[in-house]
Length: 261
Image (cartoon, rainbow, N blue to C red; front, side):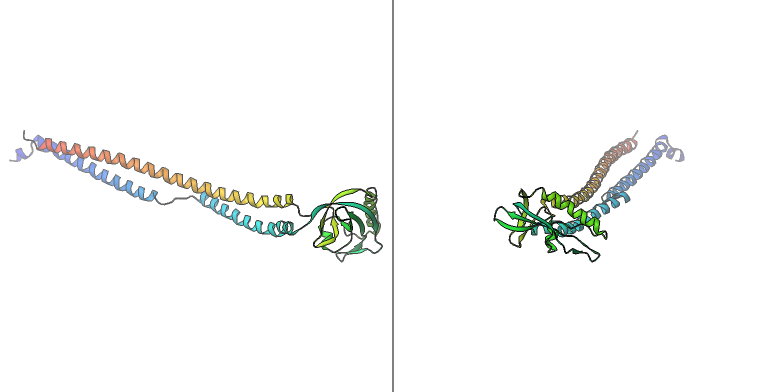
């Protein structure tokens, strides 16, 4: 009986069954490991650099909103509220006032007054260099910067007066606001359409750059997640086919060993 149980067929089939069972256990562990890895890949994974890039993008957008607020108050709103229209001015007279005007409480400066005739309405008005002198309610066309040297101030104003005297009775373009400032005209506008658009350019560029940075990082994360899912599905399909082939092979070996000799 002992010799019969130790027959070559029984002794040869035991190692094969052990090897097949071990292979099945290894494949089961591999499939479970792949499944765990697949579950892990479903979670969004981001690096420190990506997190910092997203934070930088949102910071840029926040600063752009602040810049829009500042530019809107300092540049866009004064341009929208101004009603200065282009007109024609004929230079009539220039004079330097004897009474000097106060300059920020530091010193006094000479005042150059210029009178023009408006071609459209045939009215006289005081000409100013820009809108700032109109807001200050001064009749001056030009006042120099605050300095203590009175001779230098007088020479500077006389130089501007001599330059204007050469253009007497000549027509030039100016700007008038007949509603709020009917007796005043300006030679230049402080807030123009071009300046307002140029001031809005920088916050627009910062807002677009921040949004583009966040969008590119999010797109990169989505593509990486999609690629990892495709790789895990491909690996899982290969493992499933191999497991089916090994199972079929084990069944065939078991049936061949159980067949009577």
